[in-house]
Image 1 (spheres, rainbow, N blue to C red):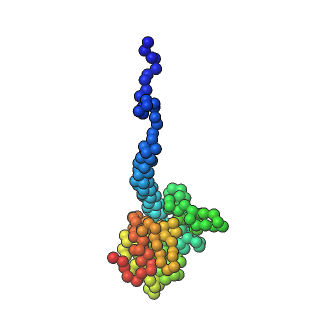
Image 2 (image 1 turned 135 degrees about the vertical axis):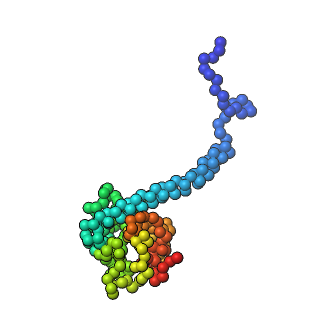
Image 3 (image 1 turned 120 degrees about the horizontal axis):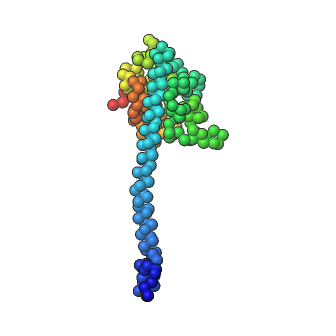
Length: 230
């Protein structure tokens, strides 16, 4: 009588007994998985970073629009505000003009590298309600090119009030003058007198409202260099 159970093929060794994987076969499988992981993990990491950068640029673009709305209400000028740790700051001046949630003031990479009483805290929560920097009143006080209180359509200082560094910045058109940027601790660190940028660039929204990445050294030159970088 024919069996009612279907016959299942299996690996048979020389003695006729079924066998499982050999050690060599298992090692080969593990090696293949390790090679695939080594190939795919960097791809996934780059994809995540690209997504964060896209969101960062989108947030900066929206804040650039909020800055224009602020100017519409305040004589066409930038706010006479500090960068982030004194008041008024960007959050104080622009929060009412942001169309979405408070998250628009955050860079997605700002995840808690600042330690307060031993606890990792996102920079945007610890200082001024935003991840982003801008050339505020403290830049003027430090002798760097600033925007605070200047006309948005022609951000040049009154006679005799120029900066002591990067004098070429005042001649830049609006399309090349940085307005806000993600130049923050989750992307760079200071070692001695040398500044290192982890990503190699900063996301920037310019005074004309468009946003794109800018090489870190060129971003730094906008405030510290007496010579315009090429």
